[in-house]
Image 1 (tube, rainbow, N blue to C red):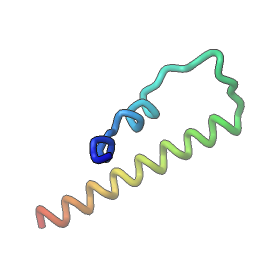
Image 2 (image 1 turned 45 degrees about the vertical axis):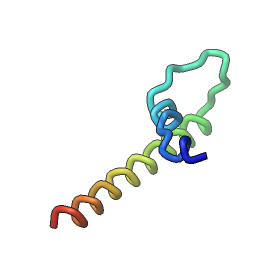
Image 3 (image 1 turned 135 degrees about the vertical axis):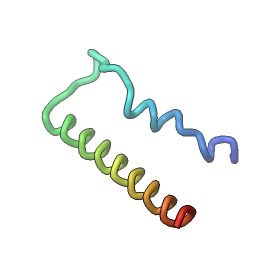
Image 4 (image 1 turned 120 degrees about the vertical axis):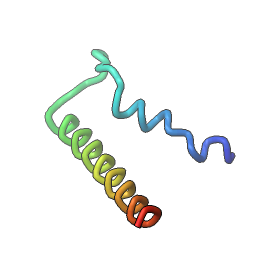
Length: 57
């Protein structure tokens, strides 16, 4: 159970996967995925800033 605790493979797969032609796509789906990627990116940046302030300052 603890092996999968820090498994970041699915996260990187979500950001850097190739387009699958068999998967349906439309505007709503693309917009949802863009917003998800944006929110995860903003969370990671904020987390890095907090870690910087906590350890460096």
